[in-house]
Length: 247
Ligand SMILES: NC(=O)c1ccc[n+]([C@@H]2O[C@H](COP(=O)([O-])OP(=O)(O)OC[C@H]3O[C@@H](n4cnc5c(N)ncnc54)[C@H](OP(=O)(O)O)[C@@H]3O)[C@@H](O)[C@H]2O)c1
Image 1 (cartoon, rainbow, N blue to C red):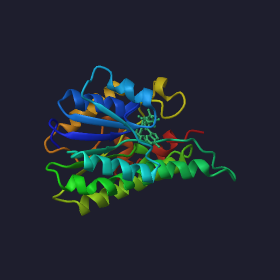
Image 2: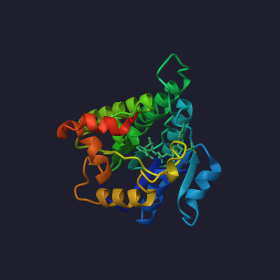
Image 3: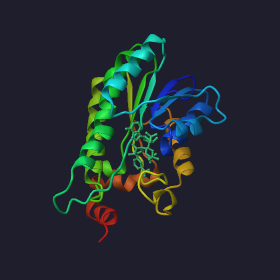
Image 4: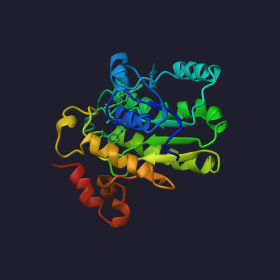
């Protein structure tokens, strides 16, 4: 993936990892469009970056995705990079019968959202040179936490989908998986100040160094996520599951 001169569409740019990456890509000399559901939070991402654009888009809304991509096409958009970053992580107690609304919502946002956006944007990506799709999964795609079982399952599914996409689009669109470890953001309550999670800026800087490698690795793996990513290979699944699921 080239590091400058792209036109990047990044979902979930109003907070956390999405904001940190959007700002870094912009500062390297890329056009960046960020999306999210909160106007004020998107505006904060744009502060001091005059050419960055923000668009309200709920990734759960199929019609809105269709209209948004049509609008992009009608304005002659030159988007060549899609970063599917938007996500939610509701904690779920699966020890008894429960309301499955959270389970449904997380599948909608984390799995169907990227699938729908890729589907609608693909003609535009195929018409550009140097096109890239980045899907943000999680270390929990590889070893789950029972505190967020559906979240972990959506990320495992998105990992699998990304592998298929890479095969299907070989030679046409580069497909990259970004696999974060626990990072200090607002994804779950208290996480932003939890010292066991990687500081956001440190994570984002490490990610940018990995993106800049030539060629860009198919999987962007910061050091902290490798124990989860490679637990099967390393024969450490039991220890890693115990660490992720204490008590
Ligand atoms: N932080 C971690 O520890 C960690 C670890 C592994 C993977 N990840 C993944 O990294 C990605 C970013 O997470 P984060 O940690 O940066 O969380 P975050 O700070 O909570 O940010 C989540 C972003 O997703 C957006 N979003 C959520 N639902 C949306 C929807 N329906 N439509 C549009 N945008 C939506 C939010 O924007 P609005 O609220 O404005 O809509 C926000 O910008 C997620 O995919 C997450 O699963 C994070």
